[in-house]
Image (cartoon, rainbow, N blue to C red; front, side, top):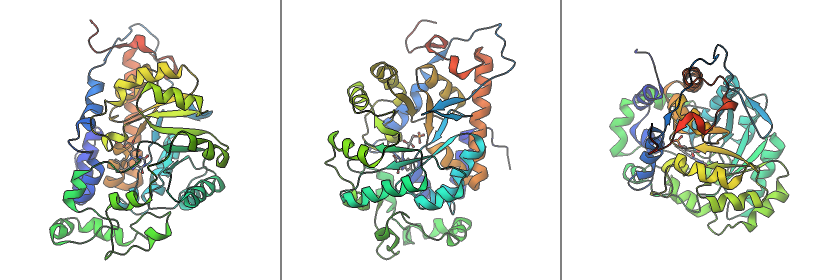
Length: 384
Ligand code: FNR
């Protein structure tokens, strides 16, 4: 087995380990996937301005996020159905995050329940909320997260309805996954995954009774399930209602312009995640990194800013932090690890990031992450 040198190698390993419909579910974006590609390409347009003859014999990669110290400036983003990639996937990823000094965010749409993940770690991380049409369900999710000890509520605001993920349409991806004539051969090729999943207590969204009751006969597409449940009528006024339910820190995920960033701050949000949902929602949004500077500027230090989307290298993390982010959120990179090798795979993904951030700081001549600023970068179009 060749060594896994970077996240791309881990991606290739994941591709071999899981059925095609599942890899496509992870990998895919909306429509033509312009935004998926834009997220990645934006990092290539920023170059470093390295300093020489700086003492970089020791480095500090730590940051603080909402008052919590993190050894690594990384947040494992909320991801629906991670438990399909490996049995107990969300628990495994949460444990890996604790072990490596990163922060885990549990998705509303997880396979493991809110309580199962909390019980698997010494202290749970953040809980990500989708607002349900049925406010009773929304309220119960928030109360369960509070009772289980999650430290912040991360409300995702860029999914009034599901983006158009055409790979999933083509593959007929359903929850729970269904054996069809079209995927039978692929499942045979991935018998290891099929056998692993037979050990899993469920293959649906664990937090909802109606989902747990779904059988393979009446399986639904993710888009159909969420369209039925998600509330497309929510506005800024609903944040006040959430504030009353959740007294702790509130994070908004899916901010992509300065106006919304300003409004978020006016509504007392403590942190916001600059994100286009990894290109899975509105195709044609700009790269998250490209809108980061205008949002950092609009926020003016009144809330913490997190960059999400396209982060695949430690040098990407360093660039985002130099542009004003406090930490980066990652989605697919840790899912590749989870699919390739369970908890050890997620730990490997985080270790690859740690080594790359450390090496980048060393070669950049900036020994501490919290000393990074825009002077370490040359922007797009800036003369070298
Ligand atoms: C996601 N994402 C997501 N976000 C969210 O707020 N709630 C969710 O349930 C999900 N589910 C989900 C599933 C899968 C398979 C992926 C790949 C992503 C978006 C995720 O949190 C994050 O914003 C992106 O993944 C970031 O982009 P990268 O790091 O994947 O490029």
